Length: 324
Ligand code: ADP
Image (tube, rainbow, N blue to C red; front, side, top):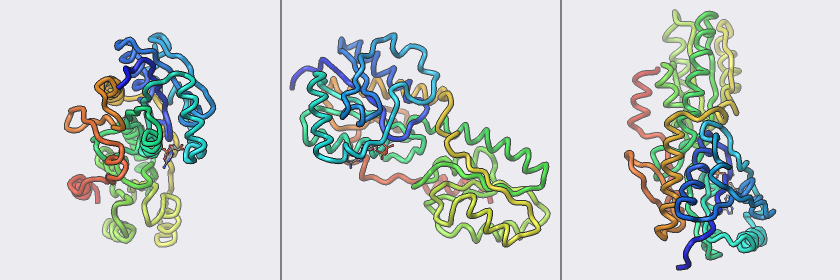
């Protein structure tokens, strides 16, 4: 196998706090192996549009504490086509790139898996998404920061909810899984958590409110993918059922995606950034580097893409005991 001399790194799909720390770690580890390192701007879009920039140690100075991604990110429909991937390959060749590190979610890894089966350029992935819903790693970069943002926001909402005897439905991110919702529920002492993994929880809410007539202030956390509806839908339904109560909806939305990464996310991103370059130099291909039981692991892209990851039954039990 030809020796790797030029390495490219990019961020793709949804952004997550800590992606910059991962870019920094990849660049500095690449340089420690005497590689030339390039950044590709805006994910697969930049690969197709030939947006490559050289990165040096100084290029990634003072970014470890910044949210977002200095390389920007994007979604790119063209990369889903053979013609799009051919253009991307030609640009990688033009820039003499021998290996690529992708920082993103399982969509980005699907694209990388398909591409490296078609063309002989090795890819290694670093899991970056606030949703934490990736199989093979206990934590994804950005999850801990988002969880802390949500916890702080709910603490604030709780103050006003208590003062006004109000019920709040707080919607958090999580289309397919309730990782943020369940942990935030435990961390804030919420009265209820509604997640995509469990059906028909809405009935329990009605029961809970009726059962506690003296208690007028509740926080219910709703993952956006809850099958019975998000915070706005549930608030409207509950207002009809309990017209005498004061009920409000708050959608935390994109505040969850920004902000300075926590120490844990900076550590995780740095650790996985080093591990990703090590993996490539060790001739590993089409794998995600992840973190399981406090150890770095390597998992083939096709395994992490196919494996569904939802909140464990054990954590749901803890949440159930401590909330409703
Ligand atoms: P995430 O990586 O956060 O899961 P997406 O699912 O939006 O984000 O995927 C990011 C990008 O990865 C897409 O815009 C597309 O360019 C590429 N991609 C995703 N799935 C595929 C696929 N099956 N084939 C080729 N490219 C893909």
